[in-house]
Amino acid sequence: MKGNEALAEAAILAGCDGYFGYPITPQSEIMEYLMAEQPMHRTGMVVLQAESEIASINMVYGGAGAGKRVMTSSSSPGISLMQEGISYLAGAELPCVIVNVVRGGPGLGTIQPAQSDYFQSVKGGGHGDYKMITLAPFSVQEMADFVALGFDLAFKYRIPVMILSDGAIGQMMEKVVLPVQRPRWTEQEIREMSPWATVGRTKDRHNNIITSLNLKSDVQEEHNRQLQAKYKTIIENEVRYEESYCEDAEVILIAYGTSARICQKAVDIARHQGIKLGLLRPISLFPFPEAALIKYAEKVKGFLSVEMSAGQMVEDIRLVVEGKTKVAHYGRMGGIVPTTDEIIENVKNLIN
Amino acid sequence: MTEEIIIAGFGGQGVLSMGKILAYSGIMQDLEVSWMPSYGPEMRGGTANVTVILSNERISSPILSQFDTAIILNQQSMDKFEETVKPGGILIYDSNGITHHPTRKDIQIFRIDANDEAGKLGLKKVFNMIVLGGFLKIKPIVNLDNIHKGLEKSLPARYHHLIAENEKAITRGMEIIYQVDPA
Image (tube, rainbow over all chains, first blue to last red; front, top):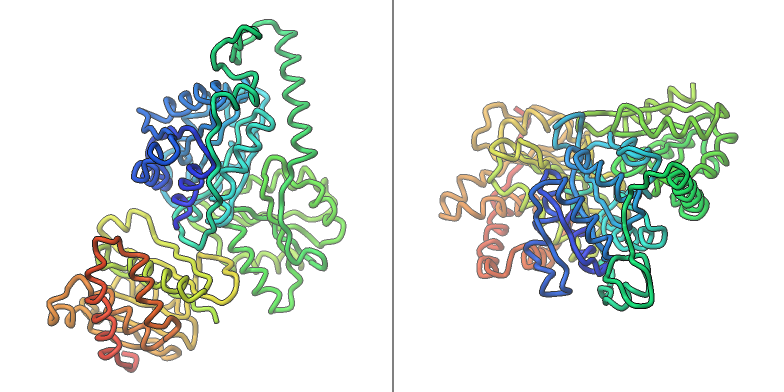
């Protein structure tokens, strides 16, 4: 299956209640697959093509407010349009899954794969002090696996979860083992699990009001403090990463998504050449695998961040490492992916 | 065994579907596979290409700059991909529309006149399967039983009555491919 199709099928299997989206390359197969599959007849899941990305994200706001598992997907320019809605979702502490199959920017850019939306995903993107849990799949399997994981995390912390993919992972086909079907939640289950949800007032409780507006500054500051405390809990508990050949490495590549796949091959080639190269792959970009980086910072000659961008994640690596080792960046932009030869050449430069 | 293949030609020649059938057949043979298409503007009327990897091991990068085998079906693709074949690798091409034949001396070059053959058979639609047959003759990495299963898996049920025709084309492709010297 294509990465996009696997993600779409995984949404149905995750017991998702609603998908709202608007087509854009390179992620259009997600809605195309859902429309063809008609999950209304399988699980009762709603699939709706909205009139715009702005409408999609606000439909997500509405569905999430009702305690439903809802999601949207788009690619870079479309995700930019959604930023206001995402900030509102974060402010109102609503759980949802947002998928960004990144293409080259800025502006309309290109339809080829890129990773230039890293800042937008992990630093907020919209206005206000907020974070999204950001998961970066690097295979078709992870495109499928991260949907249910995304919903679990979203509801555990009442937070929007971003699945930050890219055009290559979305378009490629690989083997995938699909998860088993989870049932959609019943109204009763939603009432019990999400007592904040606006599902109709019952006699035994007050009105639930979902809003991101609070004009009293002291109350708003307290709300912000709670949000920050929540993000701290997430940093403590939800870091995900994968490392290979790091133990004896002289240089460690840091890469996620498609770049990490290319880096895997670069590590294989380098090891054949006798270069002690490792790979540390952040799976969660927020929270960032800081402890793992610190652990290796004092052992290696340097880190090389490999990204399909002008250098975004590399800034976070430098913040964490605080000068304990050299941190270099190698990136390609505009829809071009780095090659293994280029990566190895940069590793050699870093060693010398 | 790891076989890294690029298939490149015009949009509409069945480049992507040929890659898909090969990838599904690989799955049927319990191989690891990856299929990475060009999905850019070139697909809309220009050149299309797909990278297919079949391997006994975990596949790392789905995107490659060098290939064990290049299957080339138009001149633009020849210009772009002849140089990407690994030394000692294989280049298979259909001469239809080719003005500059391959010149590399450090690779093996095979020619298959699949377009002409498809015309003779009156089966223009299975052109890509003739080419696939040629490839399988040179690199028998997937057996024909698994190709059959791959066809079943990748073709929608309404086209299953055409599988026999596709297999005939594969067999024909195996017969008509031949090695040539560099130009």
